[in-house]
Length: 137
Image (tube, rainbow, N blue to C red):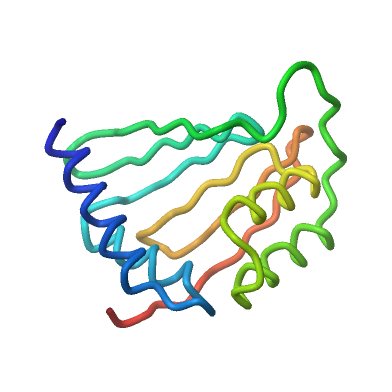
């Protein structure tokens, strides 16, 4: 296991151990930022994630949301914002958030841990951006 992998894995374990149920994402994000992660790129529906760190880039692949050939849902900002607010309220799991984002037409989202911005993208270039608050660990 590389230094980058060890550092990311350790940061994720710390974040999950201390993450509050409500507003958990900013806690996770700050834990990763303090561990040297600058960006995270998620690709839906394949659930491939790329983490950019000071020690190198790491990719992780989870179980895909769909299989085979499927139509991409149209981008729907209201459905996406509802999925984000549901997650922020602690009323969904991460997997449920990913599924709801996909149903809202999100094909990719990027997290900028330095500037605390998440950008969500649709298949035709649609974009929705949102900042998240700084938290104290």
